[in-house]
Amino acid sequence: MAVGKSAVGRRLARRLKRRFVDLDKAIEKAEGLKIREIFSEKGELYFRQREKETLAEVLRENGQVIATGGGVVMDEGNLRLLQEKSFVVCLGATREVILRRAGTGKQRPLLKGNDRVKRIDDLLRQRQKRYETAQVVIDTSDLTVDDVVEKIIGHLGPET
Image 1 (tube, rainbow, N blue to C red):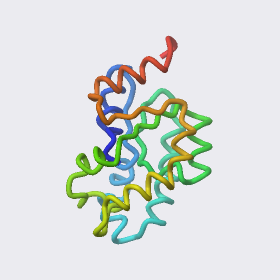
Image 2: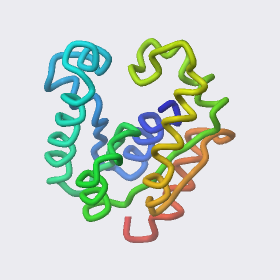
Image 3: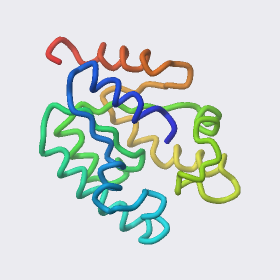
């Protein structure tokens, strides 16, 4: 969270002249609820199931840029599907940058609680091995959106 997935994804899609899909926004549209409302009213398990279904649906199409939530890779099936059907880029940032960018965290259900630093550290530790399976890993801490887009394009090769 707060590493630039949506901003970078939108800009990258524009540069590549491709459709952009924000997976969380697609879920919100289908559910008629914000992600934080889905978490609070229906729970994280329900959200993860909807996330899995929506990801599979989105990946039926080719040639798009997709921004997923950071937890999507914790499901083995999701990770396998992403690896089979897409070029996976993991955007990261330092804990301090994530804290600053996340603001108060009120819009981020996984940051609920008093100790946001511990929560971010726990999430990063739990997800690290999965994030490392991406074809490209980019630390966005000291980069602009355009810098990140250029790095990604540099890894995609001439066929894009």
